Length: 297
Image (cartoon, rainbow, N blue to C red):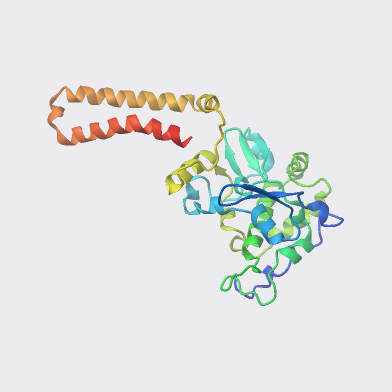
């Protein structure tokens, strides 16, 4: 997208889908954490940039973007009715970086922020000022990044809500405001899908659809963060219940390998330096591996 692209200075759709004023469309408050991990509560007004930066935050997932191919496919998410066919319970999240993340029997979806269905909000708070040269000269008035994230979540819902059955489910699960009518939704989808080169105008995260949580956890841990993307378990009993088969298989495998190595040490392999090195390394792994995993949890 070039620096003079007018698409970053006008709303991506019109008219608005929700009647009335802006105030009821905003959350009552939002929270941030400082460098000392202290939580602070704020209200959206009047610093809309700070509010939108937090509301649409994708930094955590974009930190590992180059590895997202391990967690999902570069394709749009499947419709909501198909998520139910797959046996996934829809869990509401207000965290943008959990939107479309799934695990066994569950998928996290962020409801469409109602203010994103108000065209004037895009014009006032998600459009660049005159003379803004994105991205060559970004500053605090440049809204390209915020706009790309906002457009990304709307784009994801054009795939999630394809049929009227999806629309009714979405409204029942509070993903789309009940005030939005089906005809208005179809008009919005046509506008969003009709945006030229939309893949270059949404945040890079939305080049991928559904992302698998256990693989995100693995990516996040191995990429140097030394912690999980999101823990599913708040009690060890729940962790062991959900992973009993995996833990049992891993334990049996380690036991078999250690037994085989013990047998090997009783034969002529005891004089083989490569075998001794492998045996030593695997023994250390079998001792420290479970401790490292336990510490990470």
